[in-house]
Image (tube, rainbow, N blue to C red; front, side, top):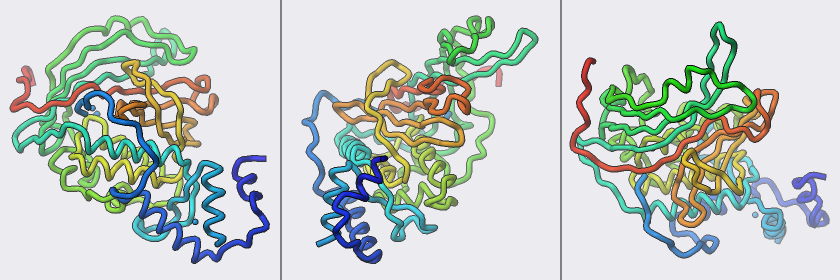
Length: 350
């Protein structure tokens, strides 16, 4: 008997409330969850100093008590309007708790205030799946690197500059590493960050654009679902992916960052991961969502004490679809440092 079946059987003698009552109570709960000043679960005292931020529901009450016992809360899904009332969906309390604490941590961080004409400088580490097919055979491995990228405060990534240090490759499951991968180790650049940037306007992640996004969770949720259908597998999967796009080599003001984390807590299918490690080897906890079609789990990792964002990773959940043993990390990043610069290195030969 699974967890949801046990939950349904708990206090089964209590009459079911009307759907309208459930939705009204759900709206009230969602408002309390996302409200910046709402009462929350106790959080640990602040520890240490925050460091900066990496284009790459009579009967309804009984139901709420049961939800608390089972470790879930109800959130939205199933409406074409992200701001509308949603069909109740179960989201683990640990997910809401982690993202709520991350939102609080965002407001305690030292804030950067870049100006037009300046650059945000992101230092990061990444492990990414690479495939090589040649006369020697088929290879798959993790290409590892440390990178430093200067991205304009306003505008497209084509105005950015990148330096990169290729690190020794890592194994991907039982696949062999091609000999040439070892020869690529070393430093390259500076080079243009991108030759083209054809992202739609609503997918921009430069500071000038992100700083104009809604600073409330409902407005941010609507942005995450722009041109998507909430409550569909494709829409929810893409909305979850967009969260990462706004955290990786991108910087949001504190208010938008807090709204993003609280909005992410309303995406159906989120789950909590007790332990996770970023590309730099730092230990954390994660919230994640599984893509059943790809057989992978997409994780966002947070420091377990400060709740600051550390990085992201993808982990195989289906050996056949992922072509690797369950638990294999197929991609990971570590956000190491973010600063502001007046200029970027000169690019020669291009």
